[in-house]
Amino acid sequence: MLDKVWIWLIGFLGAIIGFFRNLFDQIKDVFKEEKTDSHQKQEYSNSSQQSAVTPPLHKTQIAEAKNQIVKETAHTHTSFEGTTITLVRFMHDKETTLGLLYLGDTFVCYTLEDTYRPVKIRKETRIPAGTYPINFRISDPPSGLTQKYRERKNLQGIFTHHLEVKNVPNFDYVYLHIGNDHGDTDGCILLANGISANTIHRSIISSEKAYIGFYQKVRKLLEQGENVRIIIHDEDWLQKI
Image 1 (cartoon, rainbow, N blue to C red):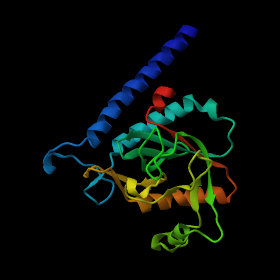
Image 2: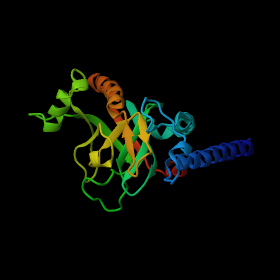
Image 3: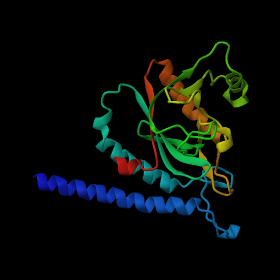
Image 4: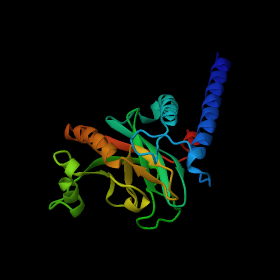
């Protein structure tokens, strides 16, 4: 019986690793910089903007594989009573980190952060992988950024306080918010419905729309008294699991 269990486990892990090897090759093909004519570039989009590259096949495959692995490792998170947000980082370059954000086991949107740096550079470094509580950032009087969001046309009646990733060593005021590229992050996590690969610098699109959908769901949970946390995995999360 033990032999059969090990054979099954080895087969399962081999299938997952092989699957991700092929998947990561596809992702690299999507984002690598090539000097080709525009008519030779195949673009995917879930919006009307032609510059948007949002591969739905990759999203579905990553979600399915990630859900399988979460189920296999669920015993490591049984002590937490609440809602878990998972950020799976899948690539980074010298400026930017791209990732996938899940609420529970449901894919929500893409993310963009600053890049990894072994030594922190202020406003140019992503936060470390780990597990952190999320709650509202409440200040009295409200900060200038909070007031700016409250006055933003499409956020009026929706936004109350920023969602803050708390207890991050050597970082303060880490928010999940709206933006376009690494210049907008300052160490925070930007949300988006699409990734653009048409420029030298990685950028995202439809950020406000993604943010509104995510914010409303998390705001409701927090206002109901739910505990909410985020678990962030670096690019080598599969190997570590």
